[in-house]
Amino acid sequence: MFDSFKQAGAMAGLMKDLPKLQARAKEVTEMLEAARVIGEAGGGAVRARADGRGRLMDVIVAPALSGSPGDIGPLVTEAVRDAQAKATALAAHEFGRAVEELNLPIPAESLRGLLGGGS
Image 1 (cartoon, one colour):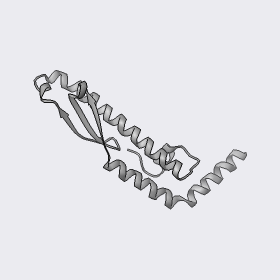
Image 2: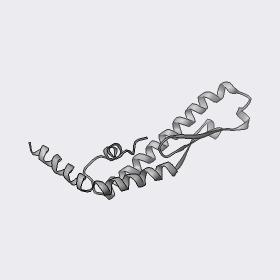
Image 3: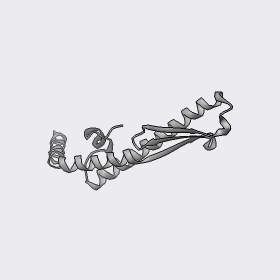
Image 4: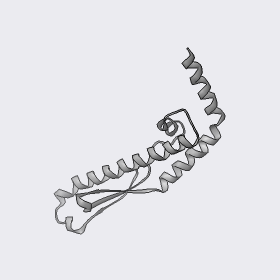
């Protein structure tokens, strides 16, 4: 029963600070859209660049691989997955920092989801 009161109190505090939370989430989201991460495979022979939200920007294949198309597909997939993993880690870090800065009693993923910061 008391847990319900605690949760209600925390939610009331969040609602009071909602404009500040929304502004900070917008800042983080804009930073993630501008950020770039690089995923690599094959020792850097294939590089995938994504924004901080995990959206693929481009893929660069080293000229040495252009003669072996059968090898390129798995390397591209690996590089893209690496870039997306790095973007996910960056987003988690940045939303975690926002939660700490705002001294919120919620997990960073909750802030990200509640305020539209999802990928």
